[in-house]
Image 1 (cartoon, one colour):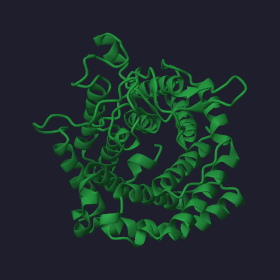
Image 2: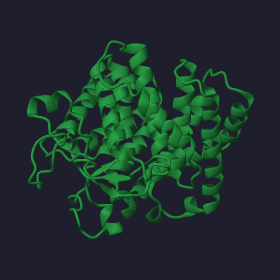
Image 3: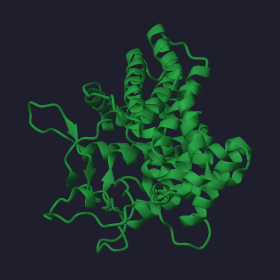
Image 4: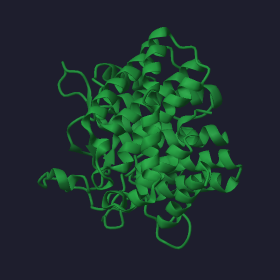
Length: 382
């Protein structure tokens, strides 16, 4: 089977299993669904079959109807933004979007239990930026400005809710997790790459509006992009986490594309992204995690790295004018491209997908494997 055929099979199984098609009730999860939207767009381009583009649009609608509203087990009803029904439908991201976790959010005053918090609902900033990217990709693909407007509205809401000043004389920071209605933080620490995600995604959203929809409504995000930049550039980006490394590499490819279009003029940003990813890769390879059996490996985290290494390949093969320091970093990273191929091959092997570690995260693992197989919908800013 070709890569596109395998990806299509994975995505259609996911669509049936999670209630996007068929009779099962919808089961939505924001991170996975963001990748899924991009995958359906990529499959439409790869195959010419418009059915996949329709599925991408249907998934956007279903995510907003499910994760833009309060949970069925919550006494609160309606849009989490608090908007009336019609206004909420016109601005479905203005209150943010729930994660989609199985347990309700921790109640005010309840004891914080770290392991249980992973299974509780709320809002994650890095999930919201993934959804902003997916919406923007839909706008770029379809020429419909609404999705970019919704992404910018989500951006403005997320920045306002997640960022804060610890003290008047301290730099701004961001909470890692907020309550469903964005009224209170649930986890006070800041995600290592959250400001960076916000910065690059906001650059992308503003570039799309400027180039394609200059008369569209919605937030301009000029203040947000400056604040994200200041927080991001003050941070440390090197991480041994494969998912984090993959995110840096995908971000680097986004920055290269935005730079080529004239939307980004910070030449040092791309080099710093590549250097951080390179340092993280050296650390990750030394860890020996890839030598474990499937039972002790988390596929979706490894596949995040494999997707990032697909971005390295596309950046290296593209016609980009790169300064020598950037070209040197990229050449060093190209040596790791076979690692992405090895990760892909490992998880394409049916026997390795029988492990409890795979089945426990089946939706996200299968969708991210499909992204690795057909990465254009996620990686290419068309």
